[in-house]
Length: 249
Ligand code: XBP
Ligand code: MG
Image (tube, rainbow, N blue to C red):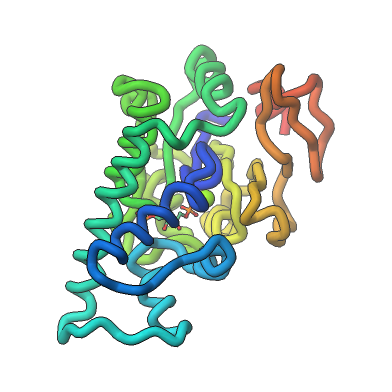
């Protein structure tokens, strides 16, 4: 019996990476006088690593750029990341990043039918709050019983920790939830947490990812104005994903 829906944020609730996080990173780098520039293409590679601080470290290790002039690299990266978060939340407050089609509709359907809602993401908690506030309104934070985000767990996705944390807080077992994700790291995390039911909505960065084992893969949840296409899994009853489609999985 399904009792809750657990949503990833970046790429799933909204297409935040290319025109949100990436831009915010680049603005923080420019402010700090760094000549790092994460192009759309480079960022695709960098998305292999979840977590902004972890991603910057990976960039420094893998790309031929000068190390910043500091004897406290962890502190330097943490400060840079704070600046990036400020830029990112500002972008959200300017209304540049909408929710993906069907997200608001499905959340409302779930609330009406008394399903419990949670979030499991690697992004910083402030970013989740800012996205929800600026798209669904301030009160929408309370729609989610648990917001599991960022550094509250030691290991980010693809580790299962963030989903395990959310399940534990809700007192639910993996077979009582359905997860929503958009990426390879997401599916690995969900499966490692023993959650079997998983809906994937792909996006520009993740369309070619390996999603073997996902229950349903779509281009989007969809709406009347923007119908969904099933990439793999059971056909939908109508033109977009309804809660009945989800509960029938
Ligand atoms: C999201 C991420 C995050 C964001 C940046 O992955 O990897 O790192 O890109 O957020 P997922 P922060 O959707 O799988 O949770 O800079 O706040 O870490
Ligand atoms: Mg994601």
